[in-house]
Every structure is written in C-alpha cells, then in structure tokens.
Image (cartoon, rainbow, N blue to C red):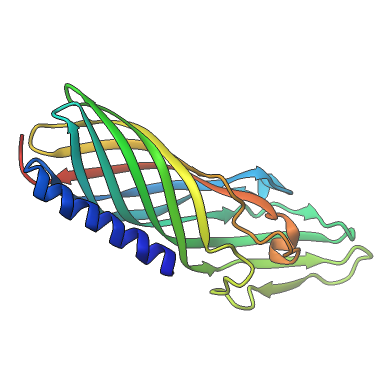
Length: 229
C-alpha cells in the first residue's frame, strides 16, 4: 500500500506544481463500467465468463500543447473479475466439477495517459499501476468423484482471502472517445496487465487454473473536466 500511496502523492504533487505553472490545468471526475475477464494461459478457459463491474474516480488534465496534447493522470476504483459458467469439466484426478457464482477483485488503478484531442476526437494511451484492495469470491463448487458416488458441494472457504494473489500490478490502458467543449466526455478503453495476478507458487487457487492468468477489461465511462473551453 505504501507504493500506491507514494504514487497518489506524486500525482497530486505534479498537479499542484502544474497548477502554479499553467492556469489551464483541469480537475475532473470519471464514472462507468468494466466488462472484464481474464487473459493468458488459462486452464478450463470456457468456464470463466465476462463480468460487469463499476469504475469511478478523479483525474487531472495537464496541457502540454494547448487544445491538442495533454497528460492525464487518474485515480480510479475499479471492479474486475469473472463469472463462473456452470459448465462441467474433468479435473486431473478424473473427478467431474462444476463451478457457479462470481469473483470480484477490487483495485485502485492509477493510469497516466498521454492524450491527443483532435477537434473533440480523443486518442489516449499510457501505463497503469494497480493495487489490489480486496476480493470477494462467491464460488460454489460441485464435485462428482471419478469412481462414482454422490456429488458434494463446497463454498469458497474464505471469500475475501487474497494471500495467494499479487497485490501490485503493472499494466497499460488505451482508448478512444469524444470530448465536448464543456468538459463532458465519453470514452471506450481497453486495459490489460503485464503480470499474472496469482502468485507463481500457488497451485491451489481455482485448482491452478489461473496460475498464468492476467486481468483484462473493456471500459465504457463518462468523464467531466471542470471548467469549460
């Protein structure tokens, strides 16, 4: 958490310095939705479905070339994760399993975007640091033994356990959109990660299915920069 606090402080310090140097610096708000899932080398991939989650936060737009090019750091609360598709699959030991329910990962995302505004049409891209605030695992698993017998159902033991997950993540964000002169904007973005979010030595989380999994999401959001142009 110290790393995220340092980044947040650095962003606001940058904004404060820039405010003293340029009166065109604008603060704003953003809110919208993630359409998220997982990417990478995932076992039983067809059992993991897309999931919708909330995103929202604040941003600072710092002009570099007036009315054309700017730097825009943002601090966003972002819900990512997946839904379990109730599809039966076979484990390495031959048992049949079926998962139901969803898993939600709550992140603090800090993208730093390079933004081009061509007459209202926006193109933006940049790196992103993410910190895992917590998770909520609502998965229910039904297992049928390989040699027959009655199926058994188990619930996630500790639905908020993040001990097997990497809490720090580096990634990227890119998107397009439109921004009106009054500061209101609509953005469509894609965000992905460079690193796996499950620790490499954890073979128990979802039976090792997600050992090489990374977060990815499409984002649709509304933004508002205070102060019209």
